[in-house]
Length: 282
Image (cartoon, rainbow, N blue to C red; front, side):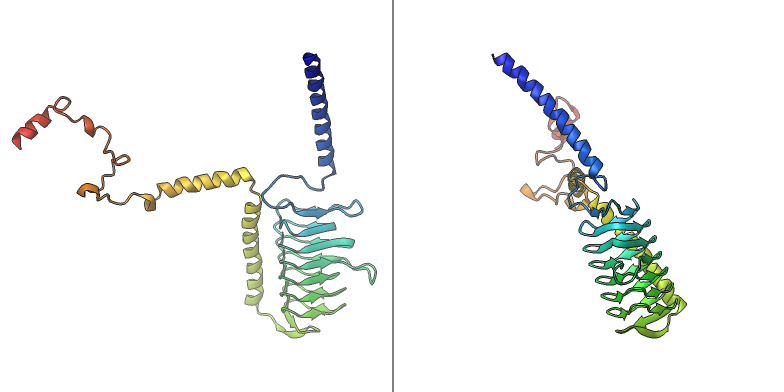
């Protein structure tokens, strides 16, 4: 009777394993992006109406960011913590080396005007800013909490000051500084200022790569790094034992656990006859 139960349990276990593998494979096929278990929550890539975001493998998208629908993001672009890029009723196209700052929002329009959103290369959209159904050229900087609204265009290298509002349909020429609400031209930017904006974009790329490396770690990697750090700490100069003043004896680097150096205990007159003559001379 017991053997019958064992055989039945074995067959059921095999059946459950087959079903489990089938369900796991089905789940993988339904995923928008390949899943790997990490120490931080998975990035939210959301397909909408069967349209999946197209994001380069060389991007950094923070775990708390959301990329939704018809969105294309080029290499070395970063979408930071809490940012939302939503291509639900139209498309969003972001070039290479750009950054969407913390809590920034990039959206499109369809109901009140048909406007997609286009963002060029090496564009910096600062924290809390909004780009809504607008077009930004290469090297543009949109300051903190600024807004660029429906149908507006910002030319290459232009800068929108923090908290400014570029109203719908406004055209900002290349290489100009705009500010205010509504935003107006302040002055023409110097070549040095434009170059500085581009240099800042490259610095953000470097910073994003560091964040990406940290978020890509799994538990095993973290444990291995901690163990390696612990070993290096014990091997450092700071970990060298301090001179031992016990019994008035100086510190001996060959000492092992306070028991003396290995081999010295055997230096008797039997193993080292010369010790006998040293004692007699004393």
